[in-house]
Length: 302
Ligand SMILES: Nc1nc2c(ncn2[C@@H]2O[C@H](COP(=O)(O)OP(=O)(O)OP(=O)(O)O)[C@@H](O)[C@H]2O)c(=O)[nH]1
Ligand SMILES: [Mg+2]
Image 1: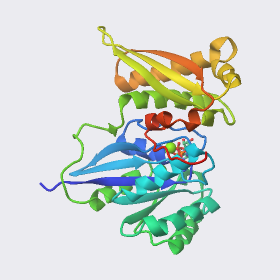
Image 2: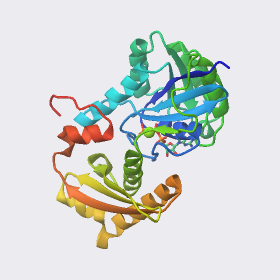
Image 3: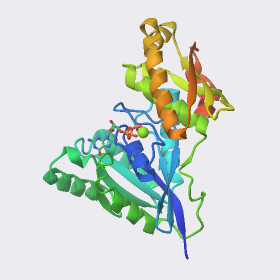
Image 4: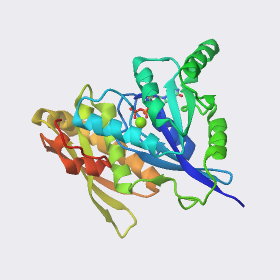
């Protein structure tokens, strides 16, 4: 039996649906998803099997014009993911079409795409009419030599099987890179922190989600089979701490409950989750915070 295995990077503008697609391909929620832009911060690998092929999907942060140090690290991680992959899939949102952001990504691809296959996936087709799709597909294919184009709805699953089957034939021949039953290559403490960050992002508004980070501080296995998990939420200001806690602590309580429930489902056992909020004005400029997220910390002005 000849096996195949390789890396497939999912790139695109923030909110294009990359994480949703990765989760669907893997069949489990490995990467967090929100309706807000810039949800994913680091490269997240999820493993999918298709026949004799093992496809390692690399979810990347959205590509946008970076301003802060964190933004720059995220965008660098995204392009790095594309540069390391055997195949790149560019996700474009059907209803947004060719935005300036997409144009910039196509420029970047002219370089990174050299010598590797780049496919186009037009996502969220559930939101537009078929005629729009054909026009958009033609427009994008005129701008870049995509090897193939797929019309998908990552959320509903339309077209996703065809994409996975095609990718299975495109990854190189070779031994599998992960055990057959492994679905993610990401420390469980980080998955747990991400789940909490997702719940915070869903409940907090404006800039706040972009100015906090979550780290798993300790993880204790208990005799009764449950896990006790302590996490820290870093915010930049006292005022933010108050908002995260909420009136009488109701926000943090709701976040904790939602994150715990999801974690329990993921792990298949009971979890005791303890969240603590810490004000740390400079966390966005601390190298350790970046390594916790799996990002590279670059020197220079923030
Ligand atoms: N209608 C529709 N919504 C979708 C589809 N795929 C994803 N979404 C939604 O689009 C939003 C963004 O999805 P994500 O998967 O977080 O997008 P992303 O590209 O990972 O975003 P960043 O991590 O911020 O770069 C979420 O609200 C998803 O539910 C789809 O096929 N159809
Ligand atoms: Mg994402």
